[in-house]
Length: 187
Image (tube, rainbow, N blue to C red; front, side, top):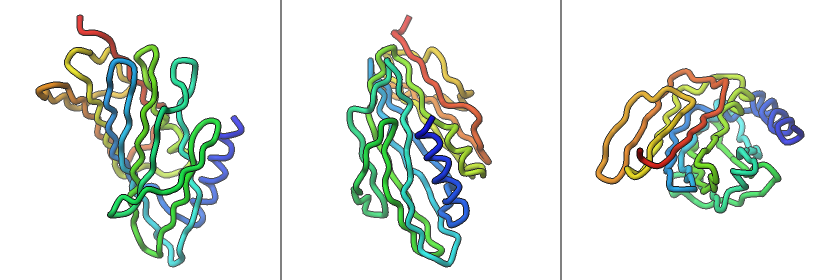
């Protein structure tokens, strides 16, 4: 609870000074007992001042979902690796944007999923107090496994040679619950 409070305090400061969290495009790649998340987050600085802010990126953690095995954050057109600071329930990093600019942030991590279920925290978007213009989530699952449940309605499923890709697309999105994915063996 203390960490979520810290995140909310940061978000309140962000709202006053920018940047604005505009959209996200995320891919979840499932294997037997690991989920790898890779994605991009789009931020804008709509002010006439440079913004430099530390952002907290929370992970869902419990007995079956320990702290990610690996993680990294990259920014800019060249996808430069930036320093990341570890916290008990997530990571943080500094984002700097010039006046009137936009910035892409790429985050990737691999998290063990002992019970073949994975939760991606979406509710933290509420702290920004404005909906995302667009959110795209792709769940890639190998053909030898099956998607048992997903907390969000799947818009499209595309069959590939080695996997199925389930796609969720939302506009003007302010999520009220987290994305929960559960998978198992093919029947």
